[in-house]
Every structure is written in structure tokens, then in C-alpha cells.
Length: 216
Image (cartoon, rainbow, N blue to C red; front, side, top):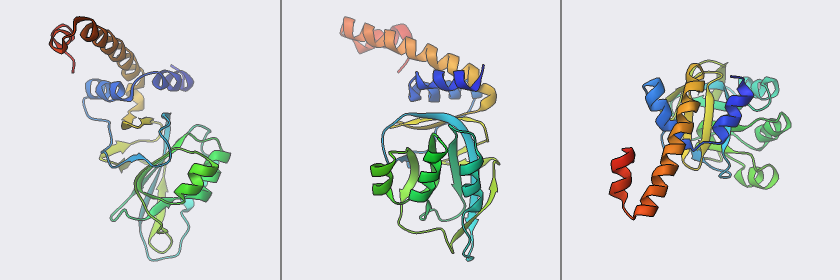
């Protein structure tokens, strides 16, 4: 299945169904911990991951790998930034958002902070999922040292080109090698849940719906 078909398919299913499908198909959890949450808007995001790793430094270095990735990655990418050690600094802000919007990227996922939230909301409405909000800069504190390598964000390993799905429920990482199977199962779960909800409403019984479909 082409990437465009996968993205369109995942936009049409519930994020919770995707999480359940990853559990079953990949045999491991794909959902990030609850602190990785939307900080700008509630828009659903779907796209292939590009990744950056940051670590501590006392040098005044720009986040060069992230800056290059914003300009060089394909449109529609989800920029995923992992941070080693302390995470209470902003690894994303207004200027990086401007670059992401100019290059038509999908979203940013940060295992660290975001700043310039008012500006991002007002001028770009660009989806950013982050562990925290912080006015502090990475300059003199962190540096980027690798890009498009496996990274760990919110308790989940993200590989380049994994499909990232997120909304107000949270963020799920779909391993690329399982993407078609996960999508097919997500569609099936959505359909079964719709039928189950209709039965519960029609019968007036939660227990009856659970007994027939075995899903909660």
C-alpha cells in the first residue's frame, strides 16, 4: 500500500483503535505516555516520522540536525525530537514552526518542551505534542547530535518512517512494517465498536453489548 493510502486510511479511524491494533499486530504497545500531549490544538495528525536526538552540552550550539531536517524532509513529515536527561527546556518554538509550515510538515512530537505557544497558535495553528511548555532555550544546554535514527519518546521507540497518529487521545506509533495490518485491524475495530454501541443503545444494556462483542 502506498504511503498516501496509509495516511488517508489512518485519518479515518479512531486513535484508540490504532492503539489496540498495534497491541495485537505488533505484540507491543505503541502509545506514548500521557505527558506527550497536544499543546497548540486538537487537530488529528498522521504522517511518517523523521527523528532527532538531543543531549546535554554547555556549548552555545544551534539545533542543527533539527533545522536541517525541517528543510530537507518530505512534506507531511512528523518531526519527532527526543531529549536525553532533563527535559524541561524548549526544543521547539516559533521559528522552527515557521520552517515546518513553510515545508508543509504535519506536526512535531517532542520529548521535551515547546515555547512561543501564543505565537504558534495565533500565526500557524501547527500541531505540537510536547512533554512540557518551557520558555527556556536549548542554547548552552542541549545540542542535536543525530537525525533519522531510532529514538525513544514517551516510552515508545520511534523509527524513521514509522507512521505517527495523534489527537486529543494521545500519540500512537505504528511500526512501518506492520502499517497495513494495523490499518486493516483498526478499521475492523472501529466497525465492531460502532455496531456494539448501537446494540447497547437499542437494548438499553451495556452487559448485552459486552456479551455479544467481548470488547470494552
